Image (cartoon, rainbow, N blue to C red; front, side, top):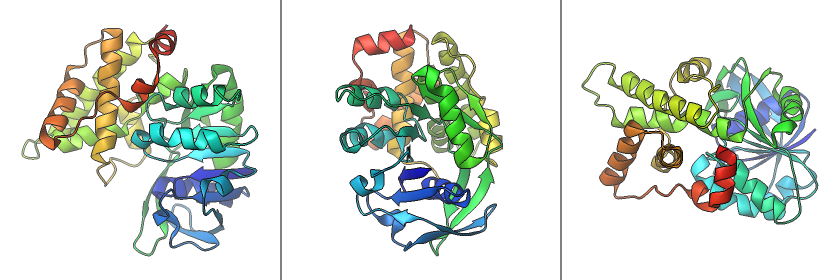
Length: 309
């Protein structure tokens, strides 16, 4: 398949390498160019996948998307509301689009943007990429973990079998279907892990783990309130990526994730006291505002009500 990967961070680059190693024709594009500055015609990986893999490096998003049968968006969830209109205006044909991560309800935003052009595409939402990776000093990608399965939701929901088939072909892993794109957004663990790591007092033993489990319990209760009870546990997601990530995610990504839970809690009248307090602490200590959530702001009340049933 012809695959375009938008976002050349460690995760996007690792997915590009794995897809290339499986014989797919992969184009990698970096919005700022930093993730591809070390690359000429291929990418070097070490760790669980060793070798050099052929890639095409695109100079702009139009060239990246040209002829793509599958588009993987591997950008932080907090930037998706600003990025998706640009991508939607550039997409040609009918590729499948996979968002990894889904950025809360970003698949619905993309669906609305495409519908305004009279276009309907299959969209997959992955709470986490299928691999964990880091970029070494020489620009090589060190793949530290390959998950035993891929969780994914789909929009529209009947597209899930086709999305699962595509993911299996790209990465050679079994797919664990989620109820829909909302379930995938709720399952995304990165903001919770970041909030627990940032806000738990370092002087108190096991405080980060306790805070993470508390935030995850609120998320699970919220999923139940939304009728999406079957989402993967935070313990499974952390274990399957080889433990907690080394790097703290950007504050904007943590804040956006907390704002999503807070907004969804208010919409469903399901209390999220820890997530709401964490959001307020983050805003109070940084002087930044992460509310309203940028994706929720793009959704009209009718669309949100229909999604929540």
